[in-house]
Image 1: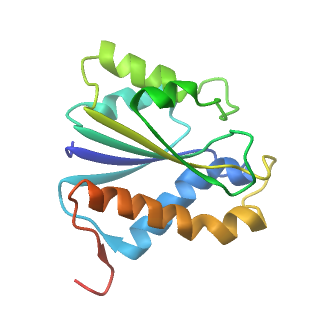
Image 2: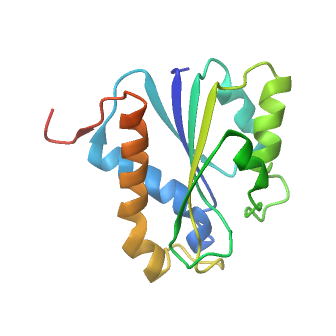
Length: 162
């Protein structure tokens, strides 16, 4: 496993609930990352994600996050702040982010740095398309993730500039 893991969470068949996965897809389409960075479409794996945290030193999570803000608003949370996130995933088999991070410590694989970049969803209902608001603002979420990685010292290169 790479020392840095960028993980997109969410259920893409529930519109904005899948914004983390959609942002991860866009990141992979537009940027080249070094070998020490792995991206993972974690979808709705829940506790199955623990196995992917072995050997990870830094974890960047992208997800839909309810916080009572305007639809499409971005939110950055780090470390202990993540414990206050309202669980959004609706499948009963899904672990909440708080549980996942806590259990990774018991499992012996807590990353030293955990950052969540989230977007406030507009529509959570069956469907494959993001809401117009989230679709319009998803590039801002990807840009925030790229800037976070660069702040960590990761060389993020646009596709075609390699």
